[in-house]
Amino acid sequence: MSTYLFILKSEMPAAITGFMSTEISGKWFEDGVTLLILVTLIVVLPLALLPKIGFLGYTSSLAFIFMLFFTVVVVVKKWSIPCPLPVNSTVSLSLNTSECTPQMFVISSKSAYAVPTMAFSFLCHTAVLPIYCELHRPTKQRMQSVANVSIFLSFVVYLISALFGYLTFYTHVESELLLGYDTYLPRDVVVMVVRLAILLAVLFTVPLIHFPARKSLLMLCRGEREFSWLSHSLSCFFVLTLVLLLAIFIPDIRNVFGVVGSTTSTCLLFVYPGMFFFENQLRANQISQFSRGSVSDGDWSGCGFAEPMCHHCLLGSRSLTFDIIIVGCIAEVVSSTHPPLKRKLILQVTRQAETLF
Image (cartoon, rainbow, N blue to C red):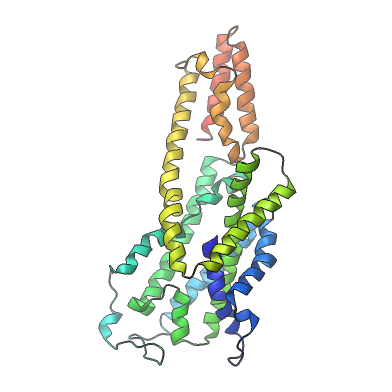
């Protein structure tokens, strides 16, 4: 979240002053920190306080439309800036036409930022469980379809905007692409509008990222207790305050992407999914073996056979998990008097449980 807030802090003053007179200076809206605090309190906080993630789907759709607009503008503006780039009073560039030849691979000291930045760009894993909870008839196949469509659309938008951004500035691409247009197309109305659209897209993304962070904090502190507006609000304020302070005091956006992308993003993208997959496979094998009689009753005594599935309450399938526990308890009760009935009950539970894996 701090990365998105950092973008707001660095881009908002330029976006607002771009629509103002050039004679205006020293105003409060030129301070990125002040603007960041205001939009956090006025826009981000009310959306972050929502108890369900479903409503944020509308704001996320608007954010994606804004990103499409940004991509279209990047493509169109490629033919508005000549190559070699013109020399002006603020930038000293050579007129060597060889700079206008695209290169397939460019290795430099900045290349180290590329991989973690790309990893961060596709980091949507934290919102998977909350979205799964609110799907209509949630299943693994439905969630997989949602993930496939979302990542594919993001990949297309990222690829097109990055490709034409590079073909516009070549080796002179800024770490923030929109800053390059200000140098050669000062006070361009379309660029100013697209900057505002990007800021709105980033602004609407913050509550979506905040939701799983707040949910995780509540689960660690309160477990499965009943919903409380007090705990909900306190955790929301705590998380927002923490990320807001990080965004205020971090000087360069590359530092944010570099650290977060190389640590948290890498774990969420590559490490944790593999760990969860192997753990779920182990549990699925245990349930399958038990349904065939390969595991002794003592291994699942006291309704304990259903315990491995209790963790999947996080997925929102509380009714299914409850059915599994009840059927498991009945199976333990009738195991000594009617083994065939027990086998039938376990087979039913196994079929239900397999939908979770």
